[in-house]
Length: 342
Ligand code: ATP
Ligand code: MG
Ligand code: FE
Image 1 (tube, rainbow, N blue to C red):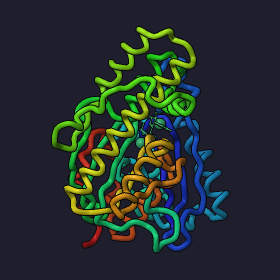
Image 2 (image 1 turned 90 degrees about the vertical axis):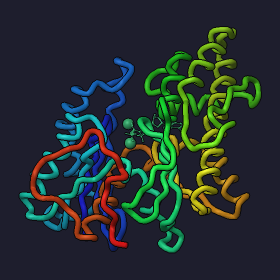
Image 3 (image 1 turned 180 degrees about the vertical axis):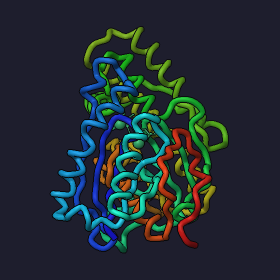
Image 4 (image 1 turned 45 degrees about the vertical axis):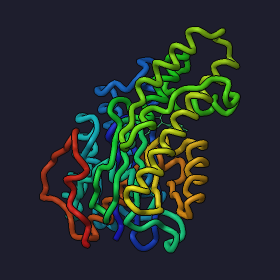
């Protein structure tokens, strides 16, 4: 089954073709980062308009790279939420129209399920994680620990009470004067920083539970930065201490979640999953308990069309799709999804 995937939930236009027999055939991404940079954040109306401009050319390009004609598609998957409603509607409208014209089913994909399944998309089939496992979703809008009993059967174990981990990276970068979007730049700077030069708390780790809180950390950084010499070296030291605090906190809660779920496989997805120190720390934690941790390749941690094509293909294979109507769900609880088989 060959499925076109379309992602337009925020500021990335992503398109891919996933083939359930041959795997990922092609993928392309257009990032709107430059468009939003001067505003210091995503401007929803500009995002929608740019998806309108970029989506069809990107679909043509992806199909050409896949070596497939458009009428070879067996289905079209698109992100239906959560996300910016105008941006979502662009992808939904194009996907629905294309599916209608080709007379193939269209399937609405949950963006976070897309992220969650990305680590299952590639690699040796025998090595791919299979439920049950625990998933850590760490992106710009979410920080969640999810027990995955089956594909489509998700139980929320814990989540952030305020900022998402990625949001904390971005805001912290901004308050130390790094240009938008700061998260990856802060991580790059942390590589130059000295470990232990500053120390920030590991929020909510000294009490039971699996929830997170990252907004206080940002304030700690603000105070440390304000009272410092504000040199480049100090900025790097603070970046390192901030990253260590976030990574340690995530690792502590992941280990706790594995204990609670009685399982040893951890799957990590979302933009912060691209963070090298987080990847290393979680590998060490998992290895120490005889378990393992699985990540997507870094490019598929952040938003992309491949994860949407893959998640859509799994649902279409299970016979799931909806009647022809354009509906998006800007706020969408993943626990309400139907299970795939089982
Ligand atoms: P959501 O998926 O919750 O709707 P989103 O789609 O905006 O949010 P993603 O695209 O998954 O989020 O990830 C983007 C986030 O990941 C940003 O907050 C960014 O700062 C963060 N991020 C990306 N790379 C890194 C990195 N190497 N280290 C830390 N954070 C990173
Ligand atoms: Mg993005
Ligand atoms: Fe995302």
